[in-house]
Length: 454
Image 1 (cartoon, one colour):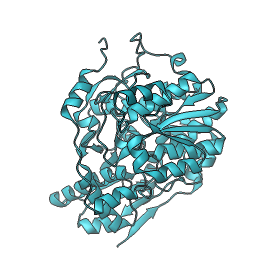
Image 2 (cartoon, one colour):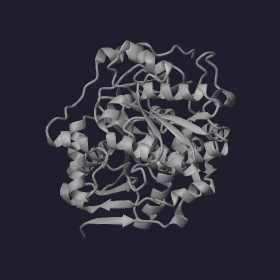
Image 3 (cartoon, one colour):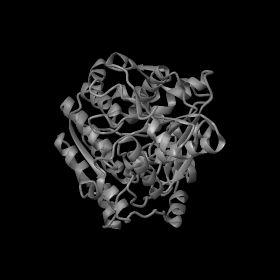
């Protein structure tokens, strides 16, 4: 049999609850600390940035959290997203492995990010907030929050990492079409942005810098809250809808993954697909391998330190224990802008520290090669971020071929590449290079990690 096989559910199968991995962990994650006192933070410490409903989700231990009906109603526009069996890719690789991918590029913004953007916009609207400030790397998150803001009548200010602001003008246009305001970061609009520009007028920006600007705007304006597209517990909670749907779709396929793969920048799409499966494993289900894939030019899990650090460059955020390259680390300007973050989600970092997931890093050219192979076989052009997951899936399929094993591989195709054509133009023109970070800069950034009492 050749060609794709599509496993689809109708809207009656949209989950009614999100899944919370916290309920099934063998050990709780380290607490979030106040940067001034070094003590665990309380709800009031986060109140200037988030509505209480999201703060409650950030700390809940409940296994299931109800999805509000207005959120489910909007999810119906693209959810459940399809699970495909990639038979043509299997044939191209001549592998005995069965390869599946959960395709999140069907959303209005073209990625998995609206799963949390819609939820965050809903809770902020419910709390009487008028405006949301946020950051974005490649633009998937900014596009998604702009889309969600339009549905709930919220103003959205997006601070976009400058290198991506210049590389991806169509992402900017999409945000503006949904009514958001998009600003290149670092900017002259904030104290943190002006400080960076004073030190380096040509700064390409980073997600850490853009977070500082967005947090500063929210902290100084009572009518404005901050929204983050990855990293935080409530974001990973909202993304769990991906894996929950996938579990039901694998039941339809009469199959179950041996290996699940996701690209990792902040950790949300990886956690969204893998955590529901990991929860089943922790509750006595089948043993599976979970593989997090990151760029070699920003290798948080594979080269970073598991330590307390700030989530932003200007040190406006609480301290979280995560795999980090240091909050002052500025990654080189490779094209997978959504993966250019100095830290990893605390929950993803925690399960990695517990030995429950694996991590590997790839260079960008080999990832683009895998993405083009996938496009030829499956007819979908992936986002540069998703190419990392595809590269790992190809390597796993080749391993199965070498070992003669018919394993089942599943990866999250977290978004399409329709707004990333300049990256592909550069790739085909031979202009892409494998970016390397400055070892001295990394050492300095790690040396500057905050001191936290044991």
